[in-house]
Amino acid sequence: MNILLHEPEIPYNTGNIGRTCVASGTALHLIKPLGFFIDEKSVKRAGLDYWDDLELYLYEDFDDFISKNPDATIYMATTKAKKTYAEVKYEKDSFIMFGKESAGIPEDILVKYPDTSIRIPMEPNVRSLNLSNAVAIVLYESLRQQNFAHMQLEGQLRNYKW
Image 1: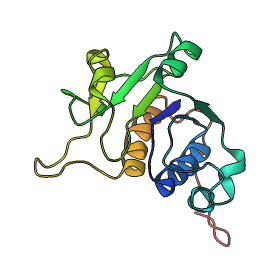
Image 2 (image 1 turned 45 degrees about the vertical axis):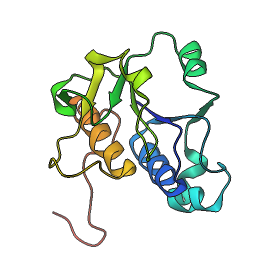
Image 3 (image 1 turned 30 degrees about the vertical axis):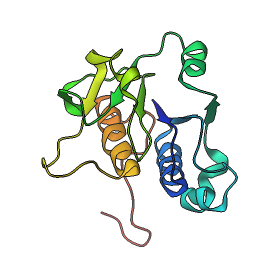
Image 4 (image 1 turned 180 degrees about the vertical axis):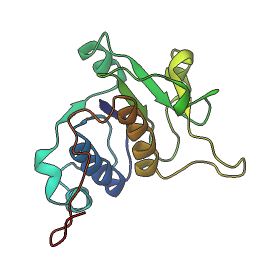
């Protein structure tokens, strides 16, 4: 899977998302402009010591992303969608795109993807969820649909056996 962030603004969110991507074997794609520098301590602190293991791609703008990924299936996570994230079947190498924290995905991009726009259900008086939480919710649904392929499915206590 691939997570695509369009112009993320808050370094802690991107750091948390980077850590989630490493933990799930997911690539992170960032579309500029970013609201921070990638080498900022706050991004790396939120991603902890996993940041160096992150498969990371940077793009100048959305058109640059499309030119480098012309056949990409992109699910647009937005509060403006009619379908929920659980109503679609995610392909193995698809992209799940999220917009910047203050404004979401620009509508001129969204209108081109009506069939793959998805939303997370919320109470009507709530504007949106935290970006890193929203990424985790949708990403792990897509991974669940793929039976968590290549992921560790069971844990073990250190000093006890089940």
